[in-house]
Image (cartoon, each protein chain N blue to C red):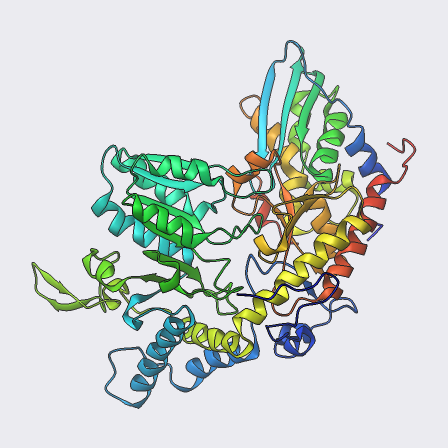
Length: 136
Length: 431
């Protein structure tokens, strides 16, 4: 069972990056996964040039959901909002770098779904299928 | 008068022991290979595995006499009706109903509770009335009453639990003084395993003028249930947790109570005479079985309860009590920081062990156990209010059945120790 939760995931889970809150966020979005009880609150600070200057999250949940959020916040910091549209589910899975069973996809995708909701009125996202519809 | 057993001596077993290894031979799923391992199925509280006799009963109906019931004036129609009604008789005997007409076939315990809420509930619950529930309830014995209470502007009150997950009987008695119309509670908690003192609680409720619905979803599969001895008014359970097929379950209620209730679903089967503007309803229980029922599932449930009768429910209960005692002893030895929830005494507890590892989410635990072919439930187990009370978003739960044994508990214990080591290992700032 040892190879599933590789060191990098455990490290993000124990010491999540960008963990905390912003004092004057431009975007505050909560997301939750009612089946598991995973939840995160994502905060973004967006500059006048449309670049994500600051990012922070708080949350509680499984290692997959929390490591995924930690990695995603690393990835989007400093990026223009416009670049977010290229973020896909596959990017999240590539970040995690482990085999995610269909039942755990919702955990892995919680941070991306929360980000999409939070900036939905600022970014023209391509439509994604529901997470549970993604084939194994 | 009973003779006290001297300290240090073991009382003669009054209940025959069951042999889980021999029982596993009756369940085809154990022939399946899971990466070189036998499945350690520890999620029977969610649904039970199916023995060959149940699979054969369902298959026999579908392949040899798959006619509708109560209709066909031909051989296979009469065979289907006889098997379906035979299953009703078997279920009535299994829970010691006084009358087979008191058994209504439904899809599951959830449907049975909804049936009562929508029929008896709408008939009797009015503005300002109170329904008493408990903090232990599965969502299926909570949400239907919330809907009814909202519709009727009625009140819900809840019996709280102590730190071992046992109902606070003093608070229950105080709530009964508010003269509730209905008390609804679980016989055995699916979240913690707590076995509630049903008979005493029913007596107190009746003395206060309330009717009582008991959710037996976690009791009927695991211990002897005698609805007449319990004295309640409604008793519900699911067939699929009782080694039967999904889509089967039963509502029991005293006959005169069923007869006084309006129908739930309307259509064929539930009628005696239909005219364009009025209908005379069928007798109970068929008044509550509109449309073609899940005939195969009901027949399968009949086979399941007969299989359990063959083992003996006293033996099932003793087997699971002993397994819980073993798990409550072994798990903390192998996994010292394990957090266990629920009653400490196996005598007060069904075959359920709910736990958390420190700093490891229950879903991660379940994912890693699955890699060793150990199936446990992780989440809130459809008891979110109970988990709020416990202060946990999620827990992991191992639950037993007739096919579970010490080896399952030992595999769980050693795998949990490995999960703890994986999450405790130094990662040296790799990220």
